[in-house]
Image 1 (cartoon, rainbow, N blue to C red):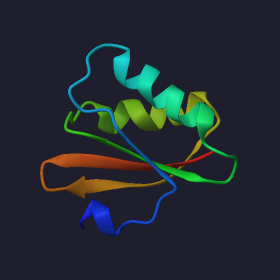
Image 2: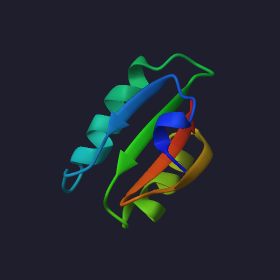
Image 3: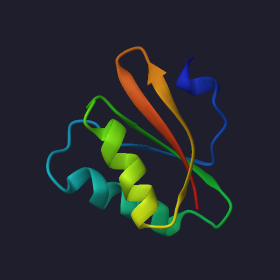
Image 4: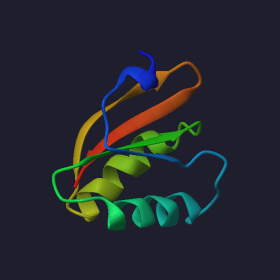
Length: 79
């Protein structure tokens, strides 16, 4: 599926970031996201397949979808 065709209210690219940086960038995006809106986060790191869902559980965010598009992974997170 092409991520351009997935409806979301905000987009954040957390690719190419190491250690805690992806979650800092993700947290900044979530902070400005309005309640009930959906954020799409994309990354090229396969490790994030378990890390992002764990982050969502910790932060009481709803992971409404996830998948893979070409060589990147995407997560749909509802605040």
